[in-house]
Image 1 (spheres, rainbow, N blue to C red):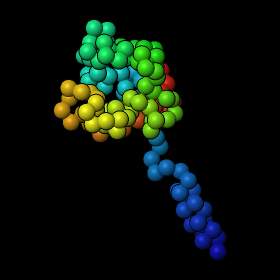
Image 2: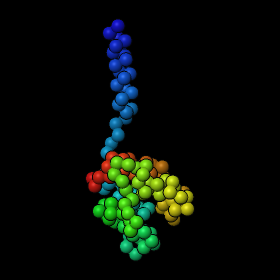
Image 3: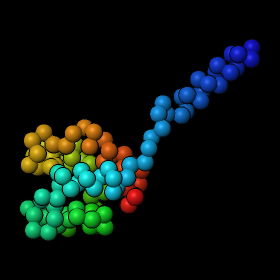
Image 4: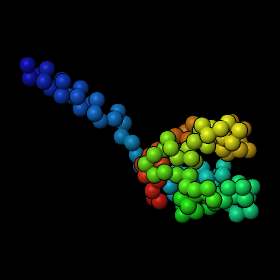
Length: 124
């Protein structure tokens, strides 16, 4: 009887705790390099994306400020964040970002960005 209780306790614990611990995503180590490599050529002052939207991705503060239309990141909510909608192509396929990268960002990079936003989009 004790072994059954132990077995069910382990099964219950396994269903509550994720299979692998989710590590914090770092803005400086994980997110900024993606922005630098794929976004800054348009989304910095003087770039086409900046001129069209006002989105400056050169710093954490300017990214969090958003566009002339409003915020692009809703900390804690990767589904509703405009930035995630754009890189996933959910807003509209014609404006999937990065615009000039055929096929868009890799699934790995999109997943990192989604996790970062879901974790609160911290400046870490």
